Image (tube, rainbow, N blue to C red):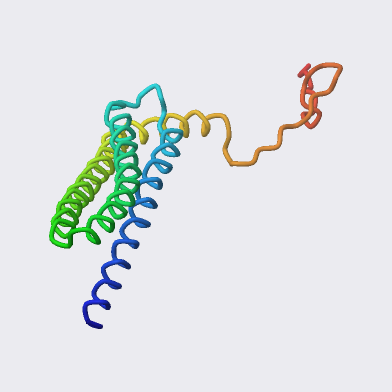
Amino acid sequence: MEENNSFKNVRDKVENDFEVSFLYITAGAIGLSVNFVDKFPFSSTEYYILLISSWIILALSLIIYLVFHQLTKLWLTKSEKLYHKNEELGLQKIENYNYLIDISNWTIISLTSIGIIFILLFITLNLPNMAQENKKEKGQNSSNQKFARNIQAPQSPVDKKPINESPKKEKN
């Protein structure tokens, strides 16, 4: 009897770890992808459908998780009452509910995986565009400045020439 109890404790811990990990991974994937959008130049970014699809899929997996979490609590209460009335029927219902929970877990895992793959595809397909934009920006910046810090000489109010420039002498 004690062995069965320890197996149940391990199973409960594994299920709790799965739920916490799932929430962190899904929410983190959405958060990171939203952060990545700022890094890509809008003028040359393509494949937005992948990014938007990933957000929809990840949100759907979160919603499915939340719904099945509530259903699990409801099913547990129903199963407990039914089990006390009719042990055999209660055990059958518990098996049915566990089957539905397993299906929901695999659906959530699949949707989350697809959502993450779509985010990775979006980033991978747009990296060349991002690299080209960065080269363009660096090219424009390097022609204007030689160093990251550049101190401009103030202009004199009279002739609008920088103060540090000496007046040119005319040759006679």
